[in-house]
Amino acid sequence: MPKPTKLLILMPLLIIVLATNNVCKVKGWAIGPTEYHFNIENAMGDGVLNVHCRSDNDDLGLVRLPVHSNYTHNFRTQMFRTTLYYCELTAPGFVQKTFDTFKDVIEFVDNECGGRHCFWKATDEGIFLYQIQKKQYFKRYDWDNAPPDDEDPKELDE
Image (cartoon, rainbow, N blue to C red; front, side, top):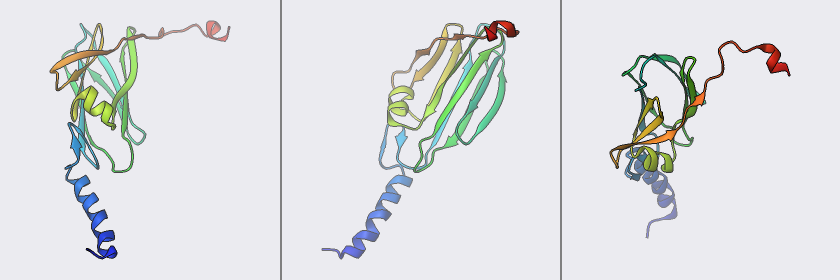
């Protein structure tokens, strides 16, 4: 039987090895720092799609996507923190939606994205997410109406 001091040293080492080598993974989600990707495609009928994505630590800035183009962000998750990215999509004067684009939790990575790549598609009908295991896009969100560009301040005060 190993001495308790050896066991105390070996156990944390085993955990670190398992976490960093992603041996304990389920589909796409993994314990420990892992590389993930999300992709947003402008599949709208016409016009530029404004994409502004953020996390607690990163503001990825505003990206203007022409029709039939993509925006991809690659990142690594952290060991003891949950990573969350959310994006605001806006078609000027038309529609908008803010939604969670990536969450570092098993339910989202494995059951919604289906792996380490989350593929989003913005269409005139709404926002769709590709489920890798099923090889199919599923509608996740309807668009919200965009606020008018020139609101009357008197109406806001009433």
